[in-house]
Length: 337
Image: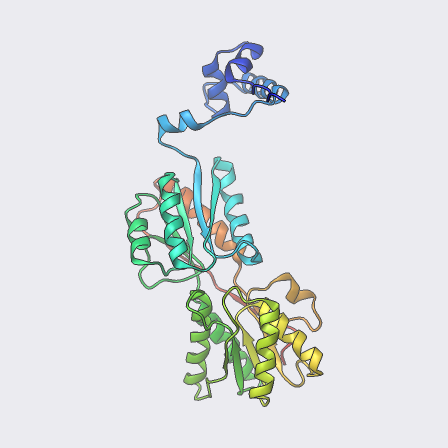
């Protein structure tokens, strides 16, 4: 079957009784086109099934109308919320997102950054503040707004929207110690691929050592992203090797749910025998039994603030690099004393 020829701008112009230039201006919301004329053109285009091709216009104006974004995981609710907040903040300006998936691999991030920058985005948003030297050079020389998220890098490339992952975990350590729990373990964050997980692990170690407590109860949980199954397996090793542990902090809510499930399988009471906390405030943590104590990093706010910085930068309203710091919230629920 021969494909039907798609309607053209000339077809829309002919039926609407205007020039092709007027059709083009209507789709770009040019103020020279009245609302009545624009409405008539858009109705005609809808009736015909016409889709405006902005490629030629973009080549002339040097505008691509998209923002490049790299995230480490496409099935992580936190990163999905960040992308959602970013998309909502950009849509009124007609900016769309072009998404790249790094799978927690900074070499893959480097490759994606090169591919994305070749398409001349209006801005680029990257997850985390650690990159290969080449990726960093490409971002520094991109000539567009660069926003690093989910981290507080020591040497920001441009703008930052994030928080200290280490500092957030220190707060959970302080909470447990304040409840009289001093034999605390940490599950996950052992692999260099997840730099934010590594920072959480480092924050745990630093907090324990600052309090003069044993920081050696560190349980590896596999290659990120750490699953519920891997969290369960890590908890099994913890209960076998250091059964006197009073509390455990997991690198994410998913691994914490796995740890909680393993305790239930073994008849270990939570929190009577051991307290459990996660990170991320995933929905599963608020509906499981017992509900999970966790840390809410406000992922949607990260995306929304990144969108605001992009718009302000594109409009020339920023005089220099901006650090927008998020303050994660400690959520103490039924899984901890």
